[in-house]
Image (tube, rainbow over all chains, first blue to last red; front, side, top):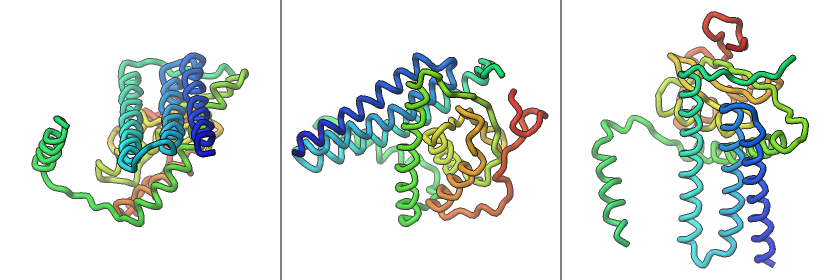
Length: 99
Length: 148
């Protein structure tokens, strides 16, 4: 039973990774792609960590994965801020919807 | 195993090199923040995923500027990182008291969500927000909310 729940959680995580990567391919400029990368991958990794936690042998392993997740969140959010700032500094024009 | 002494050394070195620890974390505020953060980042991930896979690609981006009420730098960093994981907003730089952000859809009520995040962050560190600000600001002499 736990094996199936774990599998389902990992599959949900994989879905968000896939959706995030789809966004990186389909979104029109660097800013919108950063949205997809940071937010979808953060959530995807969260689900994968949850799923793997159910299979973990010890609490130390769970704590380690939660630590990795939180570091990825901080690093991802900070890096996307810096990339977006660098793009603005070098005058990369943001894509706009034609109205 | 080899890593353990180095982790201890690096932690010690970074603590010793930090000038003064000016911030204090309030456990209750941190817990409230954690709950809010998890909820919002789930919504943020779902929102951007749906926009990415819908055939019509429903985005209408805009760059905005927000006048922050949070003053200390450490609080602004937490604020910016949180904003980047919220539905549709991405922090992209600081100038004076303002934060520049990229918004995925100009239909979103960004001002209200930014004010909410700011209050949660202030709650974590026990900061006072009555210094003014807390609204969208004009970009480079343009109108508020105008695209640059």
